[in-house]
Amino acid sequence: MARYILQRIVYMLITLFLIASLSFFLMKFLPGTPLSAENKLSEEQKEIVLEKYGLNDPIPVQYINYLGGLVQGDLGISFQFDSTPVTHILAGRIGPSAQLGGQAMLVGTILGILLGLLAAIRHGGFWDYTSTITAVLGKSIPSFVFAGLLQWVLAVRFELLPVGLWKGFEYSILPTIALMIFPLATAARFTRTEMLEVLGSDYITTARAKGVNEYGVVFKHGLRNALIPLVTILGPMAVSLMTGTLVIEKIFAIPGLGEQFVNSVMVLDYPTIMGTTLLFAVLFVGIILVIDLLYGLIDPRIRLAGGEK
Image (cartoon, rainbow, N blue to C red; front, side, top):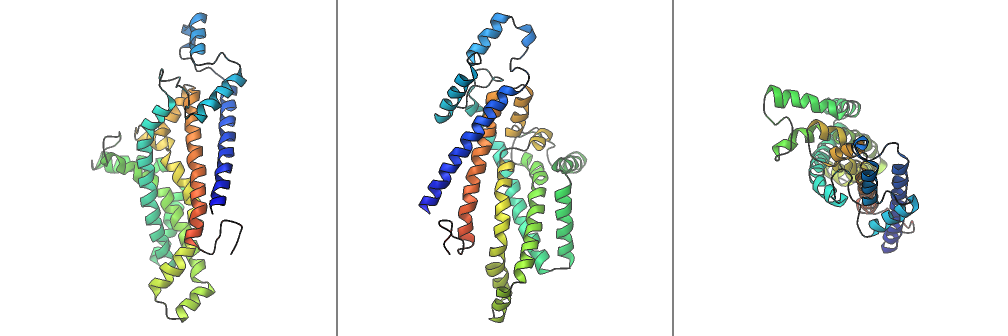
């Protein structure tokens, strides 16, 4: 196991190096300039600004300096916020995004698994149709449509919750509901499909023949095996939700990573764009490793190292 984890960490570092290099050179080939009010600056003023951020250096030198900073945990200085390190900007923004994504992922996944379980157990009945309709609606309707509908009904019409901003837990309820629809629909669909297949397996029939009660059949023998495909897709989805959803944060005026990323793209704040991209990549490759480790816990027959059984 230790050898496997070490090997995966090496792969993760190589992946992050490639992503950092690719994002750096993509930024250099983007059209436009990060200088704000460029037309109002004299040539001398432009030179001073470019010198300050090291943009006058040859691209290979900038690349080496960028990689050197990354090794030391330095993501550079933001062009948008004068003399502000990108790490400080991301640290101040990740809290609302993580809370919002975590709440949406946790509540949506639990409700989705329960709905999928009910649909599989009551196959062909009310809960089965409810699960199918929920999965179709949640997968086909964008979250910003739910967001607008929730704002109109619960915030404007009945004045039950705030329509936007970020001043406390009650401000997170509406965006959480809007965001959790997708993981709920995904979890319900996968759980229902996998549970129907698992419950029809020979070993489930054998378990019932041995006198195992229905609770043991569903939760001990059925759900455990049905969760493996779900865990595979939930990990990357959790990273996407917790690192900021661009549209939802804009709609509810939440000061998270998604809103900052959009603003950085609009003003060509290269260091912040690259820092946000790298943060997403770190979380993504990290969660992939965690998922691989979870396979062995969910199903002990799976061995990560050497393919032993």
